[in-house]
Image (cartoon, rainbow, N blue to C red):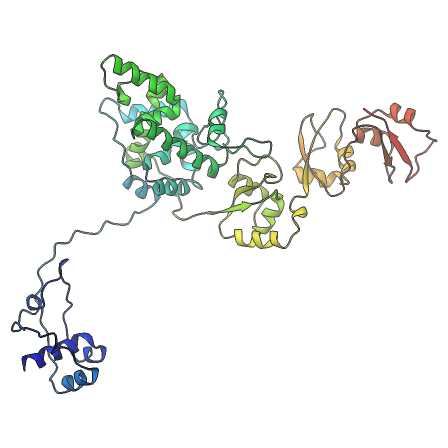
Length: 465
């Protein structure tokens, strides 16, 4: 009878149709599975013969039907549970929860460091409120992915006040203030089209790569790595060597370093303290989205910014805000990764797929030379003055030497390197043609047998310049 009872019990537990007939308390075994006899404390201990348990489904159904439904009572030991951590309230809460660097020593007053920050960058407060909001979530997420200190998210504030196009007198540029030589070492390109030190996506990746490299050079000491980011690894290494020779400690706080570097690490830590407790410093931290606000779009060739703007329902100015490295009117010729408004990358790729690559970039650049006029430049590139002014957002006809203008390239005629022919068009005069090719009216007259008037279609020889 006991064997039948056990088989019935197994049928009740293992078969879904029968489970509807019984009331069960949830059974949660201990990490090491407890014996059945321990779990079913209200029942007699049952010894199961494995051979007896081998029943066909029909046998089990007949047995179950012959039994009255049972109520199984289970006494479980009380489990020790720890409360689940509360989800972060906002971006700053998430960031401060991930802080891991040691805090400022007692001798470094946060208030003093904050005043020092403000003295060296009076606009830091406004920068803190208005800059970085588009980028902080991306930077923090990349830092979290790498498993390095979250405080590094704030380093662009110490470096540049998060001014994306900031340049120092020593040649450092961008939010991470990367020097030209360091940029070359990190693989960042600097061309007329784009200086990647100003590109937040590229420069962040490069800066974090460099910081990780420096941390490895200094045996995982992040204070030394951050100091080396500011003053160079050679200077920090020499300071360590000098302290070792003198029998002194070699931690950051004990090293003899330049004054700027000695303040650099405390400023970052002071900024971290401000993020921990903004009310203490009477600061309202800016609202930072915790989700991506832009897509990263990989382009294989140059694309006009105006096309990207049209396909993403935005403006060229907005694209420049998302891509401060772009200096010209199209993306880099050799390809690039650009930021576009979130949710628009698929449409852009579809539009590019439907457009011949030769038409991806219709804009070209023209550098104003001595003697150029807006009318002459417009004529040369088969544009109207109004079109040229609108494209370059010019408020007047005044232009300056070496000014770079965007012009259409579809019907452009290049300035000849030597002598060449020009076909006179309606409305052209000798002075206009001379300005267009950068030659004098006198030289045009001398090179051509001219009558009193120019004829439409007449071929003029353009003398070599």
